[in-house]
Amino acid sequence: MVNEICRTYITNHQLDHMHRKHESKCDLQFEHVLLLNKYFLLYEELSYAMNSGDIGHMETCIVSWILILKVIGKHKYASHMMNFLFNVHFVYPPGLQ
Image (cartoon, rainbow, N blue to C red; front, side, top):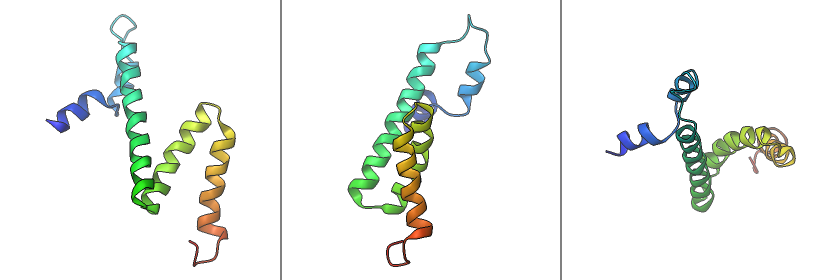
């Protein structure tokens, strides 16, 4: 049941097929709901990773958020997140990585 709900109400590769349909067959409101559900789940995943202290999972989630923030024009947030990831992996000494 959960798999069916996820396939139906969360965006995936099928969203591209929905965009290619003729305008009369296209359901923009449903497409926007799919994207909104995806963003809510990304937020929930990042929140869970931060609350549980799973740094590796949090780093993985940040990559998705960097792309989202750049698209919506929040370049300062995206650049700070990119700088954080760069510093953690390439600048800080091994004890802090």
